[in-house]
Amino acid sequence: MSVDGIDYQRIAKKLEKMTTKNKIDEAKVARYLSQLREASITIAVLQKTGLGIIVNRLRRGLKSDTLLSEARQLIKKWKKLLDSAQQQQQAAAAAAPSPTADENGSGADTTEAKRPRVDADEEASPNGSSEGATTAIAAPAVTFKESERLRTTDSVRLKCREMLQQPNYLAAEIETCVHLETGSKLDMKYKNRIRSRVMNLRDTKNPNLRYCVLMGNISPAQFAKMSAEEMASDDMRKLRERLTKEAIDDHQMSMNSGTSTDMLKCGKCKKNNCTYNQLQTRSADEPMTTFVLCNECGHRWKFN
Ligand SMILES: [Zn+2]
Image (cartoon, rainbow, N blue to C red):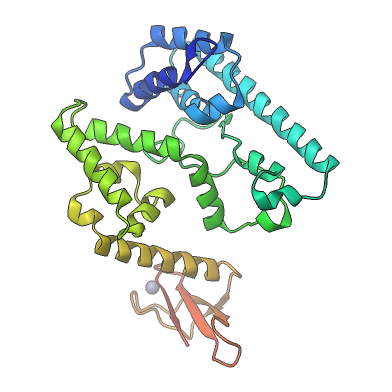
């Protein structure tokens, strides 16, 4: 992607590679950052390249104070760009409050949904939990100017939306992991590894693999290593079923904090320190389901 003579995609790739391999060449970084500083970068470019996220991650590995402040300034500038674009969209949405355009997907909500994420969390602790292969899959920083139809606070749905914004970035993460995993050479091993990932992701009989990769249940690093058997439909189906069940249980458990009791005994640790919730999970004339959480060992079960 080249705008005003600068190949942003290339810069993004180079910077990301240095960060991932933890081999930061500060002379090169200085050159790239000054190119980026001079450039009139657009929101579309930020979105396509993931530069905001990449520079933010790179920042943590920089030793030179000059470079560090340069990286910070860039992130601040991009954040401002995104914020002002968002304010304009909100103003436009407020001026025309009937969200009729939503239905054909060209409304303000749709453009807003494309807002790329720039993490300007400057003071993030260096030992924070945001390191690692799944860094790209972070909490959504997007604030939607939502119509009623699009509004949700469901964590799974929000996560899905975040995923949908970042497929380019997820692809880059996976490719980088395969590249490292196969010895950083572009040989047959690398190509075969990539080919088998692509084939399995495209396999129409195996939608569960796509689901798990997209949802982050399988990290890019794990996915890069998986064998054909592990990617196979049956294993993925089981994993997805387990994860879905856990998500439902967590959701139901979090609806209220529950009632403590010593009347129920945990089947795992045999202690009588549990919290239970009763919920109508099926039709009203059927008995309530009781969800139990052991406060000692975290074991969950349910009964009717
Ligand atoms: Zn227990």
